Amino acid sequence: MEEEWTVKRILEWIEGFLREKGDGNPRLSAQWLVADVLECTRIELYVSLDKVLTQEQRDVLRDYTRRRAGGEPLQYITGTTDFRFVTLSVRPGVLIPRPETEVLVSEALAAIDELAQPETADVRTIPDSGALESATLVSLDDAGLFLQLDEGEPIPVALDADGDVVLRETGAGKRALSVVDLCTGSGNIACSIASELVDAHVVATDVSPLACALARDNVRSLGLEDRVRVIECDLGEEIDRHMDGTVDLVVSNPPYIPSAELTSLDSEVADFEPVLALDGGADGLDVFRRILPLSLRLLKPGGMLAVELHESCLDKALDMACSAGFDRVRVVHDLADRQRVLVARKPC
Image (cartoon, rainbow, N blue to C red; front, side):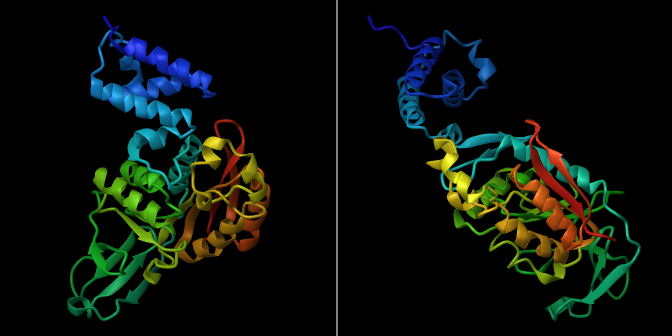
């Protein structure tokens, strides 16, 4: 009689097979794959060691194990990954969110607390748009965009991807926040910020159609469509100019690996993840150079910039940000104590 394939047996078999194939952490890989098929946590596996797998589950695991043995990232195999407090879909062709980028989000959220509160307001007339042709768009530097009609209190609004005015709800006593996420990839940064700050409205951009499609899927699955808008464009090309000078925070995880270092990446990254999302040019700062003037254009006085960069680039990036006109420029280390995030403020 054939021995039954229990959770314990399949874990041991996958771990041994992947170890022979050179997996760097075969036990973790086995746990991750089996937990995904059984739709449970890795911890829960160990209270179900005697559970017998169905033939269908074994077939899926056979395919998973084959792909993992070929070096494919676990996240692409299972199609999901956890990032901070959300679970995101991932797929080939789009960069997999990294733990160090959670540090970027933490610093971006902390930077919001540093925002200055200028007292001035900039009033501009909305372009002719039917019923709104007599209204004005008011940019209050400490509270975002408002629609001022002939009478009554200003109405909080935002601009959608086409530049149209849409209503924006704000919590009582809370300040609405305008955020731009450049090079959004899977949308992990935009979705995290919007899910953790209920008054944040995020415009997320990426040049990759695959990335934008995935980011939109993640926005929808997390129920954030009313506060996260994904735009396919090169950095900020399609961001409405009405947003100039109104943004609280610009955040970005751009391509930043120096080109010469691409050949030294782990094969799991080099063979499967998109070069477009990795290659930062000769010094890793090609995209960062473009982010600096764009951010100065978008940010309101006192607005904050937070960018993840390669550890070898941060000293130069700090000098560049200071030369561009930012102040309060600082560098933050990641959990491995490597320079990782640049934070800067647009002067008031």
